[in-house]
Image (cartoon, rainbow, N blue to C red; front, side, top):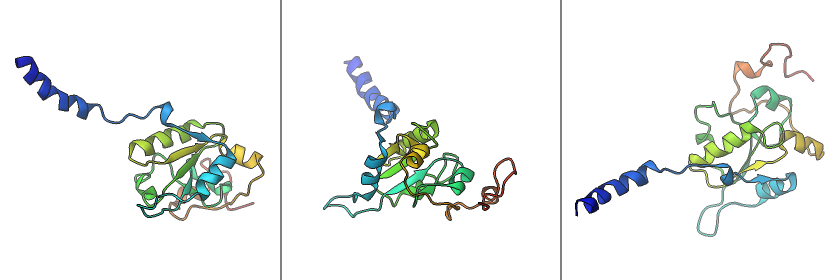
Length: 162
């Protein structure tokens, strides 16, 4: 009988301690074409309101300013409200500089752990997008312009110059 009582007391504590962990199995990488389809496909169902989908450029602000996927938000893991900025979106496709970029992988896992349900990665990243001949945009993300985004980190080049 005492073992049963201990088990009943410990079971909820064990379940609480075993929160959702995110592993490599939870990260789904998409080709450029698959990612474009994911972005264009409406999220939600007939029971829930449809939300717009979004690209997330997880690279630093200088790389984003020099070139990014049209419509992408520049969000980094160090941003205080990185996850909150994405609450109004459905499918989130994250990319980094190149093939399965570690920063993109970390961003995907962080967003999943914070409760975002539909987060994917662009397998070949920005480099794969460019290699596929897709359109690019330049400029700052209006949601996160700071003085540090006006020049590169080594203060060599004004990123507004072509």
